[in-house]
Structure formats: structure tokens, C-alpha cells
Length: 289
Ligand code: BEZ
Ligand code: FE
Image 1 (cartoon, rainbow, N blue to C red):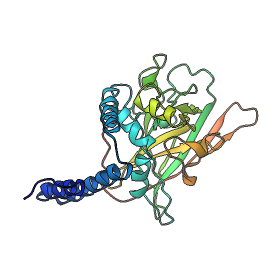
Image 2 (cartoon, rainbow, N blue to C red; image 1 turned 30 degrees about the vertical axis):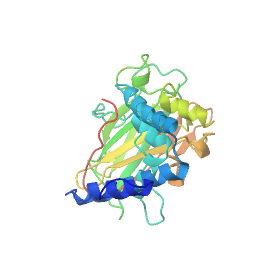
Image 3 (cartoon, protein in one colour; image 1 turned 180 degrees about the vertical axis):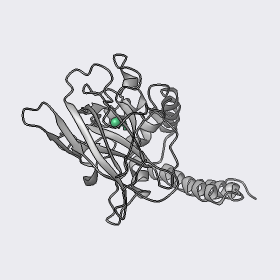
Image 4 (cartoon, rainbow, N blue to C red; image 1 turned 60 degrees about the vertical axis):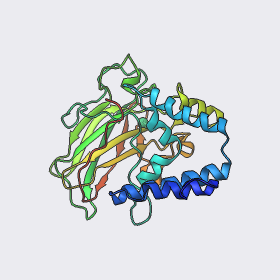
């Protein structure tokens, strides 16, 4: 009879129930998920209290998500899953990745800017002026003209504009086009490191694990052009004390930028080049509106 007998029989019945899924990828992914979840529950001998707690955590991360943050994305980030997906899907021949996790703060439709424009549109106390330049190329070195370079960053006090009523809407966000030689440049302020949001269930988890929440300072980039895979990445400040303890594991050697401070510390520069792969130009779903 096809009814539950032992704990192991539940997995067999679950796999059997899902066996007729017409979409082959959904069938493979869900079967593997069921096998791993069942193995996990068996390995840790999950108690009823722990199960209730885990379900409550999932409900809470959904409830904590809204217009200014996405706690579900944050949970995936803190578990290392977002970085793992970025690396698996964007490896170069050396196994390193020029891509990084999207994070919870990308917004679609950032202002379209002219080359050289300043994305710091509000007062930016303590901000060292930063000039960013670089190029977008294909793997064989051809310039990619007319690529969109979408940039977003935290302010010098470590807050994204959507987290901070003192900043103008879309402050420190902008979209630039590369020129005929594939080059772009813009002005901004040097970003500061900042804590990931800790006021929700993910913050409780970090505290329970004695983990600090501070990301090393970085700029986010999303580089796109039809006919190329969208490159989502981050460029980190090379002098940040948290480069080796990023709570969301985003730092690879390739993503550590050359932020140079002019003598006197009045102005910083960053030069960084991006390489696009051929592929479909598919944008992620924005984590916040
Ligand atoms: C970010 O870089 O914007 C970010 C990434 C993961 C968690 C929180 C923030
Ligand atoms: Fe960030």
C-alpha cells in the first residue's frame, strides 16, 4: 500500500508525488530540494519547536520586506547563497567571478545621466569627492559602445537613499552610457562601509551567531547591452577593514578596486574595467520598488 510507514518512506512518497511534473527543470530542482531538505531534517533531528521557529522565520522575513528593504534577499545573502549563485553562473577560466550578488537595494529606473555627471544630488556630509572611470569590453578586448552602466551606492554615512529621509529620492544612483571607445566616467563621493539592516529577523540571526553586520565599502554596478549577459557586480574599497569578513561574502580578489586618494586626501579616483559575455540581456526583478 502506498502510505507512510517509516521516516524514509516520506521522502520516497514525496518524490513519487512530484514525479509527473511536466517541466523537466522544475522536476529536477524540486526533487533535489526535497532530498536535501529531508536529509537536513534527519541529520539535525529537527525538533517540533525548531520546526515552528524555522517556519516563523520565513513568515517574518516576508513580513519585514517592503518599500525600503527586502529581508528575503538579505536572508539569502547572509547564508552565502546569493554569492554562490553569482559565482556558479559567472566564472571565468580561473574560477574567479567578475560578478557579485545584487543585494537588496537595487532600484530600476535610476536617473539617466550624462557622462561626467555627479550622482551625489543631496548634501553629503563627510564625503570625499570621487571620480570614477573605466571601460566596458568584450572578452576579446573589443570596446562595447552604448552599454548602460547603472551604479548605486551608500552615502558617506553608510545609508542608501531609500533608508535615509535626509537624502533626495534616487540620490547616489544613476545610469550612464559608454562612448564609442566603450568608456564611461562619473562623479560621486567615496562610499562608506555600512551595516546590513539588523532591525529584523536577519539581525536577530546575526546576533545569535555572533556575526558583525558591516559590509566593506563598495560601489554597485549593473552593466548591460543587448546581446550581452547583464553583469551585476560590486567594486570594493581596497583599504576597508572588513574586506575579509563581509557578512554576505561578496569580496573576491578581482572585485577589489583601486581607489586612489590624492595627496592631501581632498579627492579620490577609481578606475575599473568591465568585461561582458555574449548572452541574453535579462534584468533581475528589483528587490525594492
Ligand atoms: C548591498 O550591498 O547593498 C547589500 C548586500 C547584501 C545585504 C545588504 C546590503
Ligand atoms: Fe551595497
